[in-house]
Image (cartoon, rainbow, N blue to C red; front, side, top):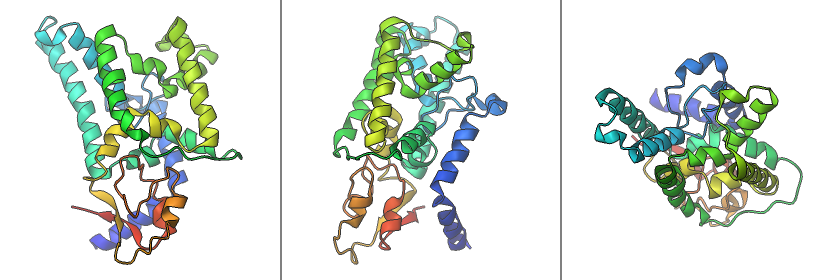
Amino acid sequence: MKGHLFETLLKFFKKRPTIQTISLVLSNAYFLSFLRFIPCGYLQCSNCIASTFSCPLIIIERGAVFASMGIFSGIFGTAMITKILGSVIAALAMLLFFGALFGAWGCGWLCPFGFVQDLLCKIPSKKFKIPTGFGVLRIPLFLVLVILIPYLTRRLFFCEICPSGTINRIWQTAAGIPILFKTPQGTLALTSLVFLFVIVLLSIFSHRPFCKLFCPIGGVLGLLNKLSGIYIKVNKDKCVSCNRCERICSFGINPALQPAHTECNRCLECTSSCKHISLALRL
């Protein structure tokens, strides 16, 4: 029974564009905004008035800002401290939960901004693959942009340059509702627009540059690929080292050699390229 259920799930998981579309809609379903207290396990701008869930990064940033203000020293009262600490712990727990269960699967299948990059990459152009290895920068970026700079400046710095957040600010401003969200000012506003333009341009010529190089959430989830309950299994006894899986991998990873690579977002393209590579369940 368990095997049959898992096979059914595998067939459903192969419908990646369908799941991405459903996730995009549900993540920005205004009528579900009462769920915004729940942090999600992927990049989702909760400054958007239509957002359903909270981005874990904005919660962690707020925790860093409040820590800088001395709120955890008891200045503002126990109830507020408990509420803020609880939200930060919940955001971190959600990231660890997603990573422990799925690895970076949420990045490849649920993240709305990842889906946008996938669509941009479908525009006809000469493609290039960003060399593997640069993904190690995502953890230092997480520590610097999400924790250190917000702590020092008392500003939600990553949110102000995040390309997903910039998209939301653009469309909401165009819709004439600029007072319902925070808008960065001056140089930082220009920086966020330039950063978004660069990511959009790169996404046309390469697969998911933001995910591969910059995304703090992807960096955290990628570290848990080796431990996740759902993982990529390689039958090394039957592998003939044809490297077909590496050629088909959009990130340039060789799944036969590194099935749990930290830059892998579990798109599962490799499982379709070779019968000796499959999705497996580890309890």
